[in-house]
Amino acid sequence: QVQVVQSGSELKKPGASVKVSCKTSGYTFTDYAMNWVRQAPGQGLEWMGWINTNTGNPTYAQGFTGRFVFSLDTSVSTAYVQISSLKAEDTAVYYCARQSARGVLDYWGQGTLVTVSS
Amino acid sequence: DIQMTQSPSTLSASVGDRVTITCRASQSISDWLAWYQQEPGKAPKLLIYKASSLESGVPSRFSGSRSGTEFTLTISSLQPDDFATYYCQQYNDYPRTFGQGTKVEIK
Image: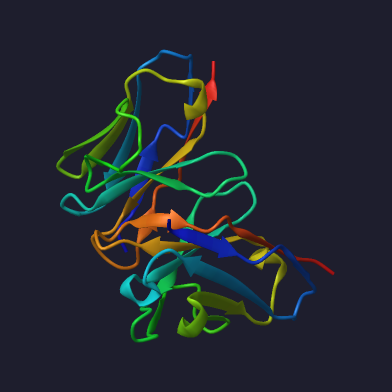
């Protein structure tokens, strides 16, 4: 069965970096794109972008360019998002979600809470 | 960017009620509209894709429809597990965009 498991919560200081992992199993990793979605505390869902797991080519939504980097390690079927120069407003739950052949997000990770606080 | 406007923001209902949530796109997205359910502290779950297709395993009390650029999610008879927040999302174009969410509360 398809599983998408993310790394655990992180507490970081402003200016630091964090790398969130999204490990998948139960399907061929390179057959499906991976999306990233952010949810700030008490807020709605915000699409961050996606990465083509076949080519490694990332696409970022406006507002997620520069400090955000999507990457892959296909040998372990894992996607990553790295956020640098962390700010308090980066505090949020970050989700990875598989993009199905139909284009929708059919399997989601459990979410990773990143807290940025001094 | 395509804007997705959901209404209402909050809805109070009782078990057994018929519930309707609306999502309007700022431009044509054909049928490329999905609905997700998010329970508190959990990841979103796909309910409906292509405006009206029910995801496998989702109860048949959930249904979706489209009229032009207006989309509707209907829960025919609200159950205790259905008290959650619902989001629409267009996947016609990039960037993908979500509605702001509709919280279904117990009346």
